[in-house]
Length: 114
Length: 117
Image 1 (cartoon, rainbow over the protein chains, first blue to last red):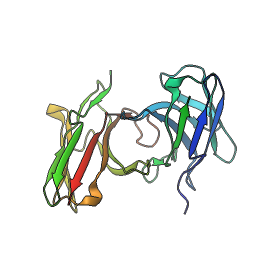
Image 2: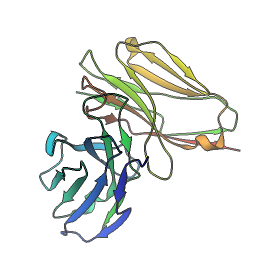
Image 3: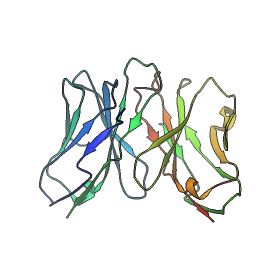
C-alpha cells in the first residue's frame, strides 16, 4: 500500500519563476494538506483541499495556490518565487470523514530558489 | 492564539540513556488534539502519538511514554533506553479542529535528538 508520493524530490528555480509541486495521497484518503518547512523550523500550514475545493488556508500570500483533482491528487503552485520560498514542501493526506487516524506525510519536495 | 513551544533545540545523549522532550502549548479552545511526530533525515514526518484534550491518561508504548498535563499545558515525550536509531528531529503539534483528521497542525520548532553509540 503506497503512502503519500510527492514529486519532484528536489527542484532548483530562479527568483521570479513559477513552480508546480505534485502530491498523490495515500490510498483511501481524500484530503490533501500542504505544509512549508523552512530549514531548522517546524512545518507551517499552507492550505487544505477536499472535494476539489480549498477548505482551509494558512497565512500565505496569494502567490501560493493549489488544486485538487478528481482522483484526490493535488498540486501546489507558487508564482513569482522569492529566495524566502526555499524550503521543504510537505504534503499530508487524510480521510475527511474520519476512521483511522489521521495524517500521512510524504517525504517532501526540497525547493531551492536562487 | 495557538502556539507550540519546544524549548529544547538540541539534545545529545549516549545510547541507553533516558531522554525527555518538552512541549508546552497555548490554546483558548477546550477541544483540541496534541501530537508528536518524528522526522528522520529522509524528511517524512512519522506519526508517534495523538491525544485529545479530554484524555489525560498517560501512556507507555514500548520504549516511548507520554505525559499530558492540562494544568500546565504540557505534553512531554520520553524515550527510555535510547538507541542510535532514535536520532531525528521530534515535533510536537496542536490541532484545534474537532477532528484529528482535518484540522491544521500547528508545529513547534522541533527538538533535534542525537543519540551517540
